[in-house]
Amino acid sequence: MLVRAPVVVRGIRLGEVENVLLAPDASRILGLDVLCGDGSNRFLPFSTARLTESAIEIDSTLMLLERRELDFYRSRGRTLASVPELGDALLAPDGALVVSLPARC
Image 1 (tube, rainbow, N blue to C red):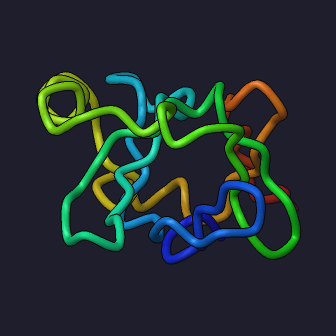
Image 2: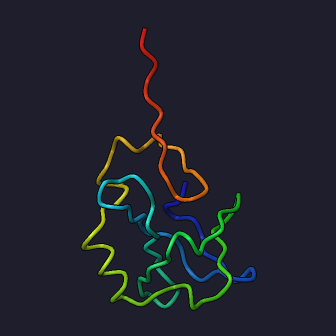
């Protein structure tokens, strides 16, 4: 699960994921809304993140973009919470969301 996952750089916790931002068609993750330790929300492009079992790792704090970029993606994308049918989606390495359809009898 991505929401509430810690975001770290070289083992130092920078914050945690507050929301997942999706493309307008909800087909892939664009990035993560990260609540940082200073109380500010920043945008983390998904392509710059590495998912591990315990955290989301980034190479540099420079990957966390300022509020202006976060607002841009918030206004043009969708949040994961706004698309309930994606609750059981699987995540491909490139950020694409794969929805498993229920089996038919």
